[in-house]
Length: 518
Image 1 (spheres, rainbow, N blue to C red):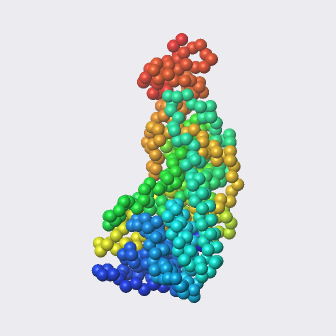
Image 2: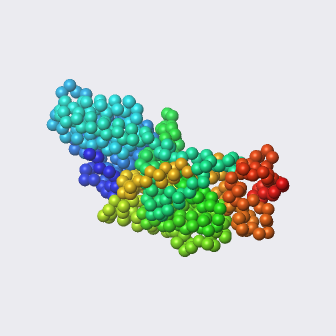
Image 3: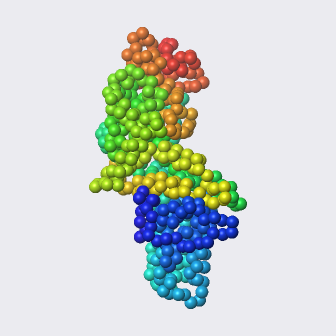
């Protein structure tokens, strides 16, 4: 069975040396890195370095690095076809009579390479043509040992199961991202509160970790490469890939949703005391996320509490014990390129390597920062050197970062899932800005739709709670306001089951003021 790559696998050299290849005309051999892998070489040389022989097998670090980066220069289907052709040609598998002793030494190495490839990059084998290449090359060595055919059957069975699991992508897990507008009547479900479903911060942190790991499970390592890279300038064919980053994008949407959900839950209660309780609850949830190693949910919660509709609630925040929140903000402070967070992440990664329990293995990085690091690595170094060689040293560093992430996302969640909580996290209505505006590293400065229809907005603009306003005796109470249906044509608020009607001017409407007219 193929072994799972760990961070140490990405930099540890193997014992087997590479096959000897002479440089082609006009090509100079690149400087060698650990294990004999060239720091730069032509694409043909790198492909040759991937192909096993009877006496040679490439080290795991090289296999992962090249399979990850090669798709920038050649489609995976074409690469597999070339590898299979080179295996057939070098081992003379097209001859009527095979050298059985030689094939028996070569066969296990070929099957091991195919197993590692299908295990780590299963989406490379979604087309029938790639499966045909596998069956063809293994069928040529099967007469020497029937165990090869049986092993191939097991490999294909595992591949189909993995592709079926990946086909159930995370998009279906997310609730609707359509924002609730203050111009429409909010559904009854908007009045549900998260604290009514889960009042234990530790339990909610566990369920957030469940959701995070479920989302991460679908992200393939190749998506990190395909997200940022354009067509190879030396290639004469179409781009090496199309839009194949759906799972990565779905995970970013989950982060955005959690930010807005936190802000929504804080701003919905009518009274300052209730809002302060919700804020303190989320601070405790964020602290538990930090202790677990779930940095992505931690950052989403902090971002949600720093959104303008929440951060401007001065009187609400005055009732909050903020010492723990300031500590968490310090841990995720962007100063020094998030140096505090990076220190905490290294500590969590070390704990994961020396873990004595499944809980200690959990490391969920702040995903947007990971994407930014990979982006700048890609932008800061060229894929090819001036002589046309592939800059393999760059891709070794890329593979190191992606390899760590792959190790972390494969951890099984040790916490029991509570379906009622995870369902609420995925489906609870949220207030948002201007449709589906994306929230990335930095929260937006304004959130008018949420602001103008909540106690938060009125409190900020009037300086006190509407339910306790003495000088504005005609101000409509918030609990009454939220039950009214707004008619945008007449700007009239018609309260249910009451004879009085309430109207307001356009300017007063934006401030949340409503005046009795009869």
